[in-house]
Length: 161
Image 1 (cartoon, rainbow, N blue to C red):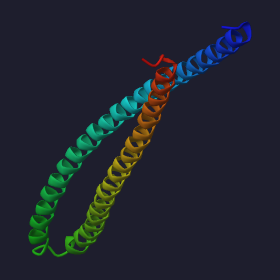
Image 2: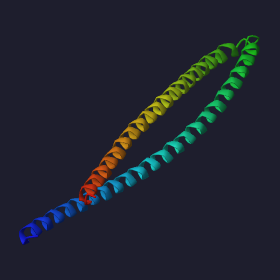
Image 3: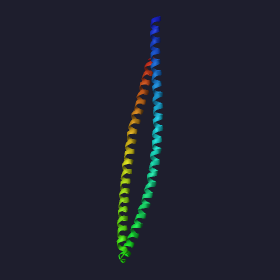
Image 4: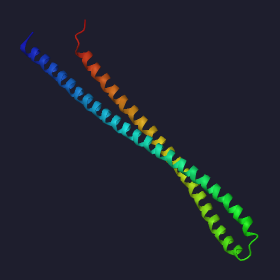
């Protein structure tokens, strides 16, 4: 083999070697990014689970308050029967009951809005998870494509039998 042919072969070998090293670097970089993204997704998952626990706790508190409101409403009904028999205190108690009923209705409306907001939030979080899953799938495909390209380059280097 001539020196010129040997130099060309060496240059081709060095060029392929450099291409492989670059691909390895890209694969390492993508692996680091996937690891980082995985950590972020894990952290977000923990935060969502924590939030769900807090929402569950708040729901229990809301249920307890609802029971208290029901109990309070029963007491108010009993007072209403007694107030019917009183003369002077009837107007005062009627105003108090009207005010309390308005507050109870406001609390009930606030609780309904809160539950609706939490459902919307939960749907938003699940939608975000779906988007993250899709992005992760694209990243995995990119890494797989990089691996396939690397394997193709390596196979081109292998001498034919």
